[in-house]
Amino acid sequence: MKLTTEQLREVALLARLRLSPEEESPLTMELDAILRYMDKLNQLNTDHVEPFKHAISLNPLREDRVTNRPDTESLLANAPDRDGTFFKVPKIIE
Amino acid sequence: MSLAQLTLHDAADKLHKREFTAVELTESVYERIAEIEPRVRAYLTLAHDSALQDAERADERLKKNASGGALLGIPVAIKDNFLTKGLRTTCASKILGDFIPSYDATVISKIRSAGAVIIGKTNLDEFAMGSSAENSAFFPTRSPWNIERIPGGSSGGSAAAVAADECTAALGTDTGGSIRQPAACCGVVGLKPTYGRVSRYGIIAFASSMDQVGPMTKDVRDCALLLEAIAGHDPADSTSVNSPVPRYSEMLAGDIKQIRIGVPKEYFVSGVAAEVRDAVRKAINELEKQGAVIEEISLPYTEYAVAIYYIVATAEASSNLARYDGMRYGYRANARDLLDIYMLSRAAGFGAEVKRRIMLGTYVLSAGYYDAYYLKAQKVRSLIKQDFDVAFEHCDLIATPTAPTTAFQLGEKMQDPLQMYLSDVCTISVNLAGLPAVSLPCGFDKDGMPIGMQLIGKHFDEVTILRVAHHYEQSTPWHTQKPKLRD
Image: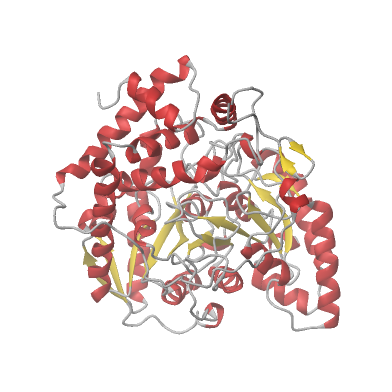
């Protein structure tokens, strides 16, 4: 096995996903099978290969200038919870 | 023949000659939708009222100015991962189930100002993750050629809508084949432009180093016209390229004599269905008869493409989808603790395949595994790109099948994610290398399901692949076939 249930739970916490007990075992097996498939990359020696960076070379540097107008109302329109012109979120600092 | 069946270029000609109005054309499309949508289910959201307003405005412009652009008054379907101001955009996910964008994607602004009529938002695999449109959180779309079969994915709704005349043309996105594979499955034309050719601003991000927007159309000329309308530099997308957009539709003519077409042997192996190989071989013979020079080539790293892709794409997705945290928009679970809100919102909001990919992406980026998976994949990705660089030293384009099989049965691959991933085997390398590629119809299998041929071009050489595609299309009847859609 490339992936244990313990590891699966650690990754789920990193990914901020609560897995149900019913999801854990099939997901472990599926991910394990996929990771084993990916092992085929280890057939290749890539010691002297540079990792891929860009498909095309670009120079995207530009002046750092605000170009969009603030539009509080439309930005808040999809908020799950709000208080006036603020997003309402649970208490973060104890 | 109903107006909904017309190609974009025919409809545009006739609109400009005032043979009918944009409102009549739009209504014809909605009549067709009313007739067959209960069976095909290509759309997640229809925008009938605003579409009629779009059409009325287009008619005003047509009255005033007889030389409007090709898109003026044309009914277009939009994959539901493009932000459309004021029109619900779900990405086929429950986490965005009632999301109303406050702005338009750049390509949407472009086609709106060109006078296109937005018919509605089409179904897809949730967050564009899938090859069958079955991963939609709402319902699967069905192939108009056989409603027991998948339309392909992830842009399955757009492909089905074009094939079934539920729109005149459509937009899709392609990260690993999501325009080309459904185009092949549904017997339409689909183009993934060069990475950087079309703005990604306002497209819901999946894997940012590969995502690209492109046209899905009834023929190659339509494809060229729609590409012209959406391509170009956008200051809001720093990966979009600032180079002039060719007039693709005016460069389709001309013979293809001495054009060198590479045929990679790795795409004609036993994993590709014999009927598909035969049809594509025949199509390549046809191009040879018309003067193209055919050369067998090798792209030796092809067999590693799926493994690389499902590392790189899931890594990028795990990062891109971190934004769905239930705080500023999207679904928020009912819990008191911050961590619980994050974890429960995402658990309830994402479907099985999206969770699988977020997990995989998080794993391959995590401490201790980064070098073994992510870095390794990016190194082999360089070798994939090098394969193409070498091939393009002596070829003008490369011809392959678009998909290893024709459309499979609904449910056939849902229990085996790895088998589903392998349906992208012919399209994925193109995204890894950032190249342009078009899929066009080249025949049918014994069950009457369409087969697609893929033409891959050099970076920014959409002109050549469109010209060869157009040439082939002119000499074959495939694109004129329509699905029967019997009860």
